[in-house]
Image 1: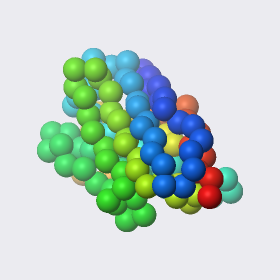
Image 2 (image 1 turned 60 degrees about the vertical axis):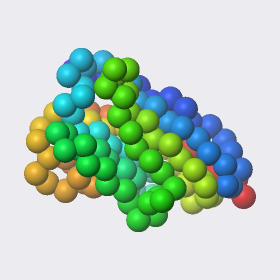
Image 3 (image 1 turned 135 degrees about the vertical axis):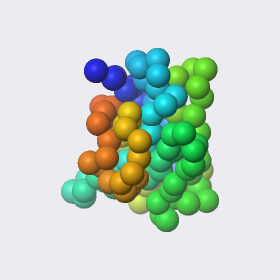
Length: 126
């Protein structure tokens, strides 16, 4: 069972930055497809960003494109989501997700991911 642990959430004002990190217990983590999803109060979980293996290609939701950057640190067994120019609508719980399977489906679909972290809260005030 792969365990994912997110960290780095917090409260910031609009325009500020946060860096989320997701640490994995699996030593073959570098071969996993990884993603970040988020869920605002009263809304469904939505895709934010993903990085696929082996291509290393990154994908972003239109709402975060140009502001968020997803990266993988193989040596540290982590993925990080750098979030800049934060907006109040970025508020929500952010979840790290992982899939060991070759990505042939929709990278933005939660069903494509087998493992999930517990989530970390991000609050952006205006």
